[in-house]
Length: 500
Image 1 (cartoon, rainbow, N blue to C red):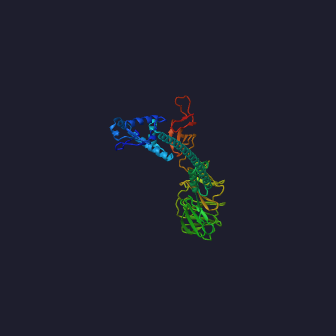
Image 2 (spheres, one colour):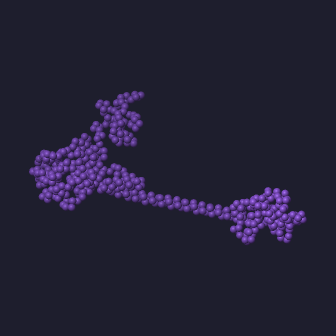
Image 3 (cartoon, rainbow, N blue to C red):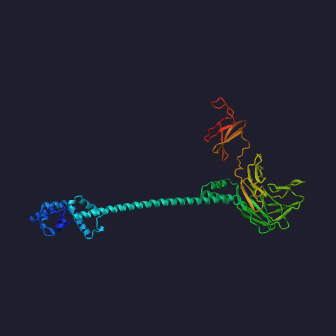
């Protein structure tokens, strides 16, 4: 079979070979020699000292047994011929490892190695060397992959550790920044309330810490709503006067009178000043902002702000306390000698937003601004400490729910929010007993409705009633022999309740 070269789309041809290639079986070569002798005697092959060849190519087609062998082993013969040439080239190149088989060619050659009798010693050495080289390369690649995987794992671990550390450092830095912003916000509650609230929210959004939560709660509960810094006039030191509602501020000096809108902080009007001949140590502004009363040398001088002229003088009046009526038409004064009311002018209307109905009164007492309801004067409904600065004026605006005052230095008008202190949902008649639900959303109160005490449920946030529930207290309890009293034990939000 080694004397045949199978064709690839062509006829099969004979293949002269060296006798060394026929060293196929036993090491001493006795069997190949005997076969060659028999074939040569039958004139089927020709043999010389070095070469063996078919006697004629006609044997390939004329010998049926040989033809059958060729057809059965055609693919193996092609593989074997390529293997023989590759083994010879490997041997001639001093057995260079680069000439060895790899991949699919090695797999095909290994199938031939399953029958060692089909291969020469050179071919077996070639296939064995290819297999060893393949195994080594596979192990080397596996070690390389293992090393690369280990390096990758280490890199991932190092990267994750660095990322986590960077994240921790970034979070710590962010929290430190948030704490600083929260501290700044807390320090600005009085000087710049609006900015303080904005910074409080910003600090909490930046990082949720104890300090930022405290700043956020401080912003939610802070009474300071605004701080308007009065621009200096550029001349002599002026006097500042708030209207009764506190919505307008008049800055009065000898040269001009400036009017400011406290809602927007904008200068709305500029009028003629009172002149140098009018020293203004103390003044009072009417609720509508049209009339300025000045206490000058045991008399009161009246000034029309908008017209920029004097309206007249009230002689023999040195008030210890004084105030305009809500309409601005009367000036009430008291002193050590007299008390009375003096007509001011024919104009003026009820100033918007004042406490004209007498429901509230605001005052400064013991370094605190206090607000009372006249209907319940025992306890103030609002209080705000002003230990560091003594207000010179108080302006109450119950419609807008604010109190404004000028600080002692006359440089800032501060606005305080009254919150729900002036809420209209005010019960004039106290309850007999009350209890707040654990979540603070519902107040259960026993009140007198006529002569019958009943249980009312009130929304703890809006103050609106959720209705009166149950029968009159004091009647026999259902399925009990005792009587219900007015001590409330529970008032759950699902509408059920019971008494003790």
